Amino acid sequence: MTTSAEHTGGGTPTVTEPGAAAGHSAGNSARAPRETWADAAKGACILMVVLWHIVKKHYIEITWDVSLPIPDVWRTLVELLVPLRMPLFFTISGLFAVNAVNRPWSVVRRSNVARFYYLFLLWVLIHTAVLSLTPGFNTTRARSPLELLEEITISPPNLWYLYALALYFTIAKLVRRVPPAVVLGGAFALSAAAAAGLVAAPGNRSAMYQNLFFFLAGLYFRPFVERLARGSNSRRLALTGAAFAVALLAVRVTASQKLPLVWPLVSIVAVVFGVTAAGQVARWPALGNGLAALGRRTLSIYVIHMPILAVLDWLLADPLSTVDVRWQLLFAIVEPAVLTTLVVVACLVLETGLRRVRATWLFELPGRGAQRAAPRHAAPRKPPRTTRPLPPRPADAE
Image (tube, rainbow, N blue to C red; front, side, top):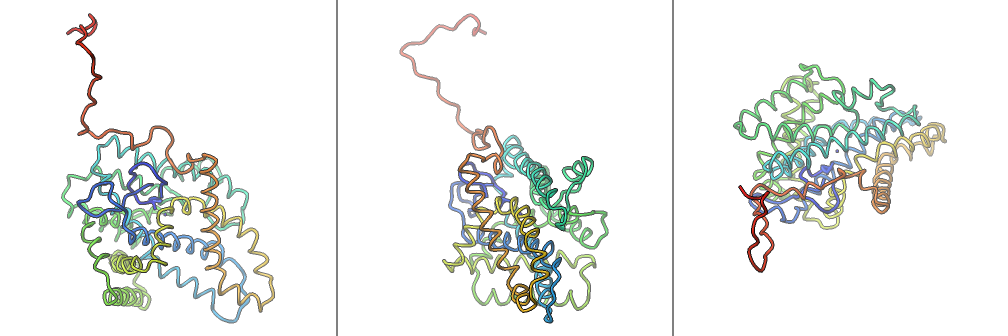
């Protein structure tokens, strides 16, 4: 949920990390430095992903005996962030995918398609095993081989972001020579239809249909997105934030979220606000650098946080439901924020430990690295120099 989507080889993969990606400006080489604003945006997105799961799968399942509507506030907050969270995440992923999609099929197939599907498949199996130990946790899990087969093929579970990236890279490569207006028009129509429920898409399939447009938008409009971030200022932040707030209020008041075109249009406004905000945050070193550091390690947070949350839910749900009401009010106010912090820190610590014991296969595709694949235009190696020409062997003669 960084991956920056482009794997350039070397270093720690981030979620497009939910992979190692290069966030460089248009026209720069693949070795250009990553831009802080893009990583900061990914860092904010992964925090919103973790917060969403904490609230929807743990927090609202607790029996809160409090007089104030604190649980409703948290529920409403994460629901208001829905048009921003994944659309912005996929826009940044598409932004990082520009160089990757222009590489030969052999490189894209391994570095992006195979890599992300491998990580998806591996962690679905890990989640299935771990979550079977916490049957009371409110999340989707395969309970039979047939359900597992369905999850890894047509109905991806919580790890659907990785599945979507493998699919999106394939689509982006296949339509590379199709006019962008046709591609984006089709993706926008699919997004609008899925959001309005006009396309049969149970589970996370609907989310995949809805977010393809934003991945492709980041891919095709990278120069515009970068200019938007670099030109960010306080006035633009206020205007885009107000536009996002007005759009959310209008949808809430009119209950129009299921009408065709509404969700993708609101999400476009949200992404413009998110990119503008990221451009501003990047100029504040304390906050910007911290979020950017998270944005470069989103893969580990994305794949690890759900099992950790399941264990914490098993430990905390009953005590929090029965604690004295005076303490419950305090816990109801702070628990989602505190738990988000604890879960993210635990993910990063666990990833560090796993890498130290060389369990890198949990975060990278094993075998020959994609970075070793030579580009088609690479110059051939020169033959070793010899002191005098050697006569050809009979088998070499034409």
